[in-house]
Image (cartoon, rainbow, N blue to C red; front, side):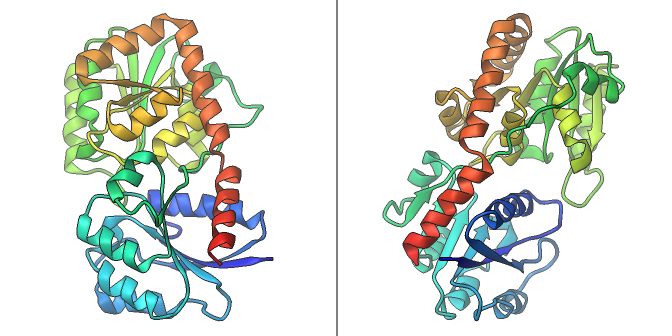
Length: 338
């Protein structure tokens, strides 16, 4: 039985949801599943008419069900008219909620959807609709072999391969907590800091500019900003790092962190619920505050056995949640619902 899904999402833009959807679609295409992409505009003004146009492009004669990739900012508080209009089409609706916590919006989505997918136990409990909710982890793409060594990756970036390197790679905004990482690195001598990423459309924001000024003052000649990292260079940047740090103040899941785990890196992440779940699974180590972060960076750089243990744990997690496994779980869910 071949399942056909209309997948509603942004496509072909700098957006974590777009990247997630493309990876999922590619993996589903290898199974008994036909995917019809329905493009949701990612940027700019939205109103009910624009979202109704999205609804009207649905391939109803081909699709068995509609799968919506949801993140709050994508719909600009217009979820109620959008999902109501979707429901009027008479097709089963599955919604992946990449974040939860906007209670009224969550209720609207849960009521209309036949099933809601979340990525972890934290989101499952926070959403509060256990009979309608299924946990499917965010997919990972475990790095295959052969791949250039860390020494080669550092040389490709013009970095002395003998130097220790701590890094961050992902979108940069205030809730990502990079201030904590920068301050911690002022307490870790003789170690470089590599920061890759930017914002969705702007090359540089005022927030990023202020962070750059800070690192120029407090980490002279020790911090390098890469800006937005293209898909072509992502593997090299991750490959060069000794430790990856994700100091988010709040997160329900992090595609960038998952990518770091996929590259088998030693990962330190802030002590928040979704990351604590992964720590219990052996994928990473959490930290609480600047001093604890600095202490654990030093500890991992000094203790090779600990670093290797974290690297093995991250790669084991990535293999267990590979896109192939995630796609298979989606397909089984589609078949169950249909």
